[in-house]
Image (tube, rainbow, N blue to C red; front, top):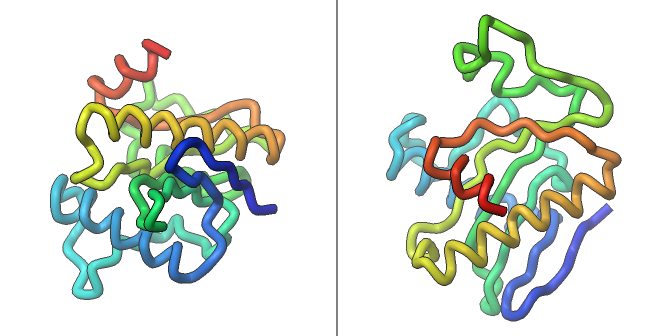
Length: 160
């Protein structure tokens, strides 16, 4: 099922084409490889990992009026492995295992294009990504979401 809605000049949708997926992978490379240096640089300038399964419907994108991607998030539903089970297991208190089930998904690779991180755009793009995730969760009967975030973004999330 393709999730799609428009809010002002922005289009929020589940990714549905190879071109949209490539745009999301390039954005992820810009953020997670070039800026944050969390993952190695890829010669093809795309950040793709073992958690990318090829199912378009588990990726949310926010697009501007020119249909350029501004923000993105990947959603990993159970029974697929979660990043927090392996890469971020050390963040779990006392080695506690993460909750899993048909009603649970993990949010990963949430990012906003650097030039769209002005206060006005960042708030709008982030808000729309979260709104898209909420709509995706409703459509997929997901009641529990897991996400690893930096402390400053955690405080921002708690404000809403």
